[in-house]
Image 1 (spheres, one colour):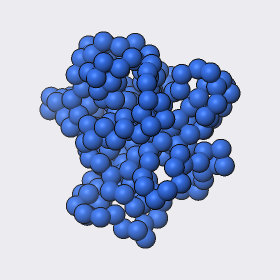
Image 2 (cartoon, helix red, strand yellow; image 1 turned 30 degrees about the vertical axis):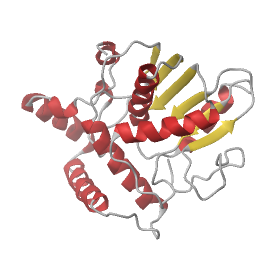
Image 3 (tube, rainbow, N blue to C red; image 1 turned 90 degrees about the horizontal axis):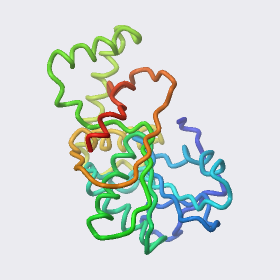
Length: 243
């Protein structure tokens, strides 16, 4: 995602009032049940624009955008709070099931929590699509596995990896201790704030077992380690199978 990303005319906010709404519609038309998809770590829903077109005109498609992307609202730092807000806004668009949800990367965790809440409430759930979504068990790794993971991240990226990771953690701490976001922030600062809160929420989230139709989509392309230290091996199908 680049800071130059813009919102196309086909993706207008659902409500043009001053009240916050997390739903960004890409296609309101079609006879199929609507599909709601949660964006990734930084919260930019525009990553789904091409996907919404590929699914065709008969598939209503709505992206879910995190608080803080607008640079005004303070982001949530718990998956449960994100899911609650998303679910309230989803019901405004689609009051009754069946509900079909998806999520990319971190967004898959939030979609998983939304499905859990729907099932607990007795709503009809059609299915869940997890797109390269990691299991938040990284902090539970043994010291040996953590060291091996750090080493595997360091080899392809060089010595700058540790410096970059440390500087990001420091910046994340500074951003998260602020009680209100800075309205003068650039897009990158807003992205970093949302990404930092989402990353922390993902580390602390503990998904529970549930019975639902789930499709796991895993990228076949090698993905280099990012500043959070995650690598593709943690996006495992077998780990999700335990849930």
